[in-house]
Length: 229
Image (cartoon, rainbow, N blue to C red; front, top):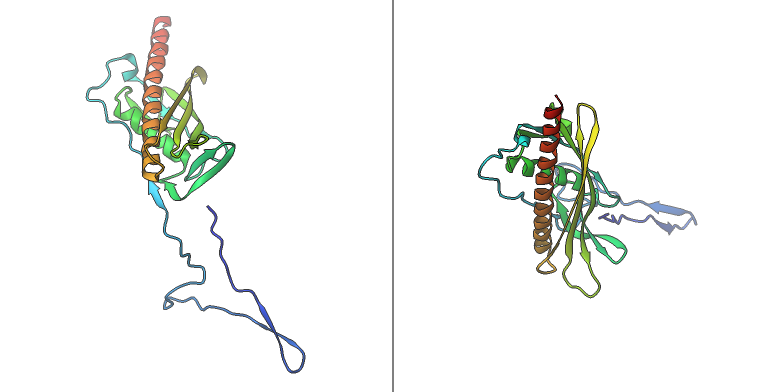
């Protein structure tokens, strides 16, 4: 949301001599000043956090439990890579006023996936791509949907999240699998807290689905590699 700042327009006054005098209003900004001409009267925006699913109680015993995986920096659809909470009504993309995510959608999704993959104990280690930790696989992520959608006549929106995961074997940069996951969760009411809760449920659904599918496919690839050695 762009804030519009209103300043003072120059004024002209005609003197006795017929000349125009430009009157400029200026404010002295110093440590002792109590305010600023640019101080906004709008309240500070509220930042919303979505929590990852509850952690698994026991570690996985599958082949993927010995795998190290990196989560790539997501590619985010145009208009969504912002810390503003996006809405769609018809074909119009907009953003809630006074409401932000804790970080951009790129940061939010990557952090959420790293925590979920770690907490589900499906892999030996999970890190971000930019951590530059040696890994067996890279999960490349695309964010296609991350918005609250209002249908015709509906008062409360539906949180829609779609991720595309591409599992890449790092040693030869071979694409192993493309895994689309999507979820739509209706908000209980048209309030920001309810919208954030719907996003949390949608993200939990897609992240758990993606984690399990990634572990299954990585395990299959590891088994095939062992059989060929």
